[in-house]
Image 1: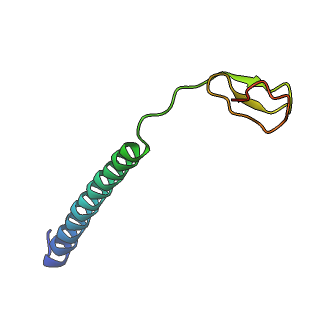
Image 2: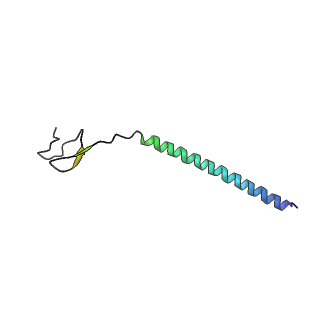
Image 3: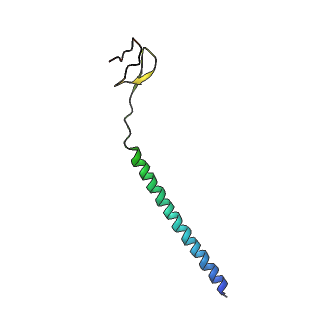
Length: 78
């Protein structure tokens, strides 16, 4: 029937399963907290802008707010 050794082994196995479940749940909470912190760190993303090729140097620059590339015939000279 049931001996003390078998009951002790069963109790230890149930305890191990409970401990592993608790550890796994804490680990998942930690991962979720870390993911939320990373998402908050990044902040809002800037909007995607169209790019145009500079006629003077050939480098692609934002369509709005492009700066001077340094060439004399730069169309974005300020």
